[in-house]
Amino acid sequence: SGEIGGDYTQFAQLAFKGSRSPWLLFFNGDAMGKSSQGAAGALICGVTLQSILARFTDRQQVEEAPETWLRNVYRELDHIFTLFKGSMNMSAILGLTNTTRGETYYINAEHPRMLLYRKSHAQFIEEAQRTPKLGSTTTGKPAHVHYVLMKPGDVLFAGSDGKDDLEIGGEIDSDDERFPRIVEKASGDLTTIRRELDKIGARSDDFSLVRIQFG
Image (cartoon, rainbow, N blue to C red; front, side, top):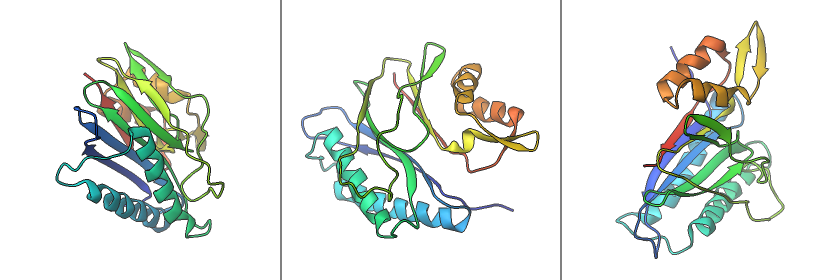
């Protein structure tokens, strides 16, 4: 038996004009709603994102700067979700990492904060979320693009709130401050992170996690 849900993850390699190094696109999102409603949002996001990426097949270069391109992708995804007039939205992290230099640009649309694991220490790399969920904004303001320069050995984690909303003692305990400690205990290993989470409590929601290591 199994269940369907609203988490969606995507990776792709892109070439940007003026950059000799390829860039890694990463996306981790969580569509609103349980079961079929969340799955419908994930499908809509996936189809739209794949359509955007199809424009850059056969090594065609992206003309805009990475941060400008991210804002344009966010705007396009946001527009699709706003067509549902508030009945469907999606939190997400959408980012680009230069595979040679470690430069990373990303947008956090009301998704759990990005985590940096460096030299056995894990910490969040943003204090506040400044970009609304996909489908929840009508302001027209550009998305806020975060920047982090990764050093060799650094690891970034982006994940849905399924990693934070654990059922402990019959109640849902939502604590995002628990996750950095788990990453440190697991030494940044994905399989061990999942095992440590399951030791603490039962998962109450979809759980997806993206891991990006530089160097």
